[in-house]
Length: 509
Image (cartoon, rainbow, N blue to C red):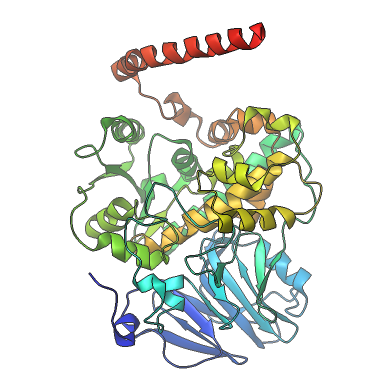
């Protein structure tokens, strides 16, 4: 399929939950709503909630986009009045209010002295911006809807970042060198069209062991509040369930509402290698059967010659690959009720030392090339330059483990996972219960050994729903466990022998 040949075909694009903000009021995408405020026009897909934001004195000062959650309530009343304690002209006062919100959202502030856009803690309602155009949009696709000669319309599946699994543009880069992504922990200054880091501003204190249980309860309470808000707002709620840690953390936090949620496991077994696909089904079936939970197994069709990959890639602005198109888009779209809510376990890995190595404790810094290597991204010149700038702009004095956790949050989550939410099936809302400023702050402050031993999931589940720990993470049970162990034993023995030989040679030299 060739790219659109004229602007009219681009304005007919179906971009669920997406938006465009610029000084122009010319219609952008057919059917989008328009909202004017202080010289700018916000245009948005009708499925994206846009809530006018008013000061306590009833002055219109901006908009809330998406699904902000405060406590256990989805903020959906329009207009939404800021509390009297929040001064829209004072950034510090405003940030206190924003950091208390969970959900998936953007705050667009257009007061006289504070013209900024703040994302949620994971930038899960992603945005890109063009300084030259003085324009902001959800994706590069939305931003370039009126530029038929832009390279995005010629981009095709199979090219970077769709050439290998889990590829993406890091450090705010996009397919267009003149368009950048706003990272988590930053706001966009609309006066200068520059991103500004707002968190963290200094090294964070490491939690003492005695403090951890209370902080884990903070995580459980906030994640549970997000889930409760979704259950109250949507006619049906879906949550993925696999053999992994993150989905079980969400399940544990959902304990009080588990009978009102349909847990979903994708079945890739008829065309994938049997390993992880069978494992997810085995553990998810065991959990849902043991605790009487509703369970939907969604067969995933084998890849075939259709346009689902290109549709997915364009919806995400070619921010990542189309690997999730078959399950998170097609299988969900064809088999689930899109008026419902979708809860994903993204963000749990912020507290799991995802990019760490055991030797990092003795180091104080990392090079751009090393960081890209840990992200499994190519060391291209633009990537190296962007990562060098990102490292240079971090607050001074951060220990390497914190730098690596911020790298996960700002690059893997903000640049890879978050844009995929635009490509996924357009449920009424797609939420990330573990995405909250206070949750991330706890995760960043967990002791290094605690994270390296993957203790967060274990201890959080132990406090919220301990019986869920009777089944292992990412491991077969019963006879399958024995078969898997026998299958892996020769390979593990070979690796052990190779390590012994290397160690012997090293000591001999």
